[in-house]
Length: 276
Image (cartoon, rainbow, N blue to C red; front, side):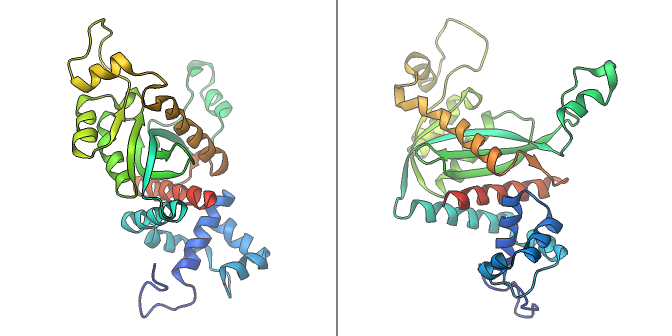
């Protein structure tokens, strides 16, 4: 990342300094005003980042638009992966999964009671939510691939983009996924096009005693258990998302689709920085 976005910029704060403030905002689970106040009150943090003056909260908000563009955020995320793995160029097993994050801070009790007894079954106040798709290193819980989108939606057609995003950062020997990614085409793409051993339970479709017609899905139906391909390690994705939500938060404050994607990418980068 260059120090300044333009040669005619005011040169009051460098881009790495502003990005460090954004990571600090995510770590503290606060907003732009909150992190600005935090920097005012803690001179040791300002000295560590190298700030002569505290940036205004609008400066941080405008910097987030520039520094969290998808191309820039992907490079920053790839840097966190490479710094953690160091000389390692390959990961033995990657667990692929997705999770949803709440949009807003309304408590579940408030959501259940806001409509009275007529809609006592209502548990959410929105029809869509922010969705984070990620691949975790089963050994370290490091996020090695990440995609940001909006749910609800099926995962079957998301295996290929998530695998490509992962392989752009690090090579993978085995990809472990749940039944939501079950598809013969996904197995063919991973094994024949990318040279990655895929392990996905063959459970999509109507219940039947017959074996699936596809070669790879038939093998999964016959052989897959927690020992075959070390498929039991797929639960490391659940552990990774649990760590992510406990340390980074399970709520997305942004409103629009693109700002929600930017916030999810920033959360993922912050999670990897914490592991580093």
